[in-house]
Length: 307
Image (tube, rainbow, N blue to C red):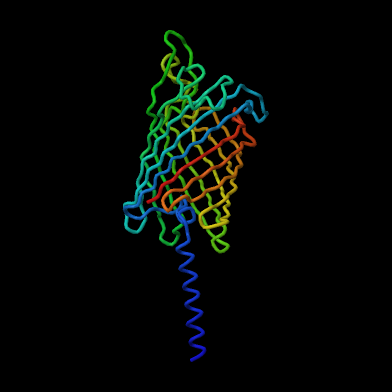
């Protein structure tokens, strides 16, 4: 009887500890990009990044100095679950950009000017998106597929054969992302991996009409973009995490006579402010590149609401 009571007591403690761990798991631990939403759940992410550079490579890998260029991107993602077993999500993604050139200060991007010589800004893309969890046996593996449509118009200087400065890629972009994560070490550590395959549709830049088309915005047409990323996260508490990350990306020429590649390293952190809202901040540095690749830094800040 004494042994039975002891076993019952140990079982109660174990169950209580497990229940406490489950209750303490936060959204930043549970809802990684690999984890889908249940039916009726909503996930809204408001992500802002500023990339600024005073260096880029030449046609090879040698670094050259350039006047400062800065690119602000706001990406808003809205997803909802449509299956009771959290196997399918649908959503919409849109992007707003502001770019400055010719030595303008990094913070000038927040003025959202559009003079075509030193600045461009505006709503650039809309993308319907779907997320699926294809294998029941792999709940932390998922696939997201989105089609980005450019919604901004070509700009031109009246009466001149001259391109305005760059705003965004002028191509329909079909991107498919493969996500996988694994949590270990008593929920203190997590490894997250991502492989993207993105195809840029559109005419070759050499075939575009110089008088009506922005040639520089067609540089990526007819190419495959393939970034490979990994994140290692540590959770000091259930509501906070810090991470380091690395990315190797390739722009593969499929007919436009242009290719690039780069390596980026970074770090960041997340904190759950409330049961619904969490915040994320990160920094990234491009440490190498090939073929007119920028060698700048990215500063990012995001807010995510999950309910």
